[in-house]
Amino acid sequence: MTNITLRQLRYAAALARYRHFGLAAEACSVTQPALSMQIKELEEGLGAKLFERGTRQIRLTGLGEDIAARARDILRAVDELEELARTRRDGPGGRLRLGVIPTIAPYLLPRLIRDLGTRYRGVDLQVRETQTERLITELSEGRLDTALVALPVSEPGLTEVALFSEGFVLVRPEADAGRPVPAPAALPDMQLLLLEEGHCFRDQALEVCGLRTGARHAGLDGSSLSTLVQMVGAGIGVTLIPEMAVSVETRGAAVTVQRFDAGPPARTVGMIWRRTSPLAADLRDLAEVVRQSAEAMYAATRPD
Image (cartoon, rainbow, N blue to C red):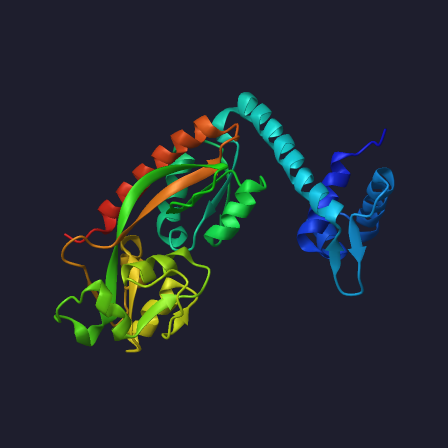
């Protein structure tokens, strides 16, 4: 009978992810020869090739694709067993790997980190800021415990818990102060500035304007809300930002903020985690802490 080790599965999963022996070895904190030897032993034990070694690229064979998928499932289950044991032993105050999208992280995290430190003494908070698609992947693969995102994400393997609804505001050049607030459908005609492809807030902004998600956009794109607001201040166009970003991003900028009159466009912010997570009960408690932190943040920044 073939003896397959967890080490071999971790190395195979890493190689399948990075398609490069050096990068996979670095991710696993081992030397490249050590990783190569384990992959060779795994293939010999299975009696079949899992990877095609090219001069520039590593490709997976059909069996390699299947093995890599099974390996990720097994490794995730093992990680969850370890997490379950740790939770039963140490309680909720241990490691927490939290993912956050870029249009939430700079504004909510400062207060949330403080509140988590007060609520969970000794918590080892590890934060990962990136776009929703990557967070979902890392969450599904067991590299994150939970994530703060805009809902819905509609992933069958994930639990979604809505936390709060947040309106969008219009940011215009300072010279436009006092002008009537335009209807959202009119924004594309005003040189609408959007985040670059991959940000969920870009898609939400397009929907506000009545445009298809993924539709081609003739305006300029930015990598962050800060960049967009500075571009508006330079008179290049207008943009939408979430309410939580207003006090941070518009401070000192030559812009004016306008709020839509009736039924302002909004997004739902929530937490997601794996349905099989042993931390589910603790994460529901954490969701309430996040909700309270958001309420406190808004109370501190809301104009009188």
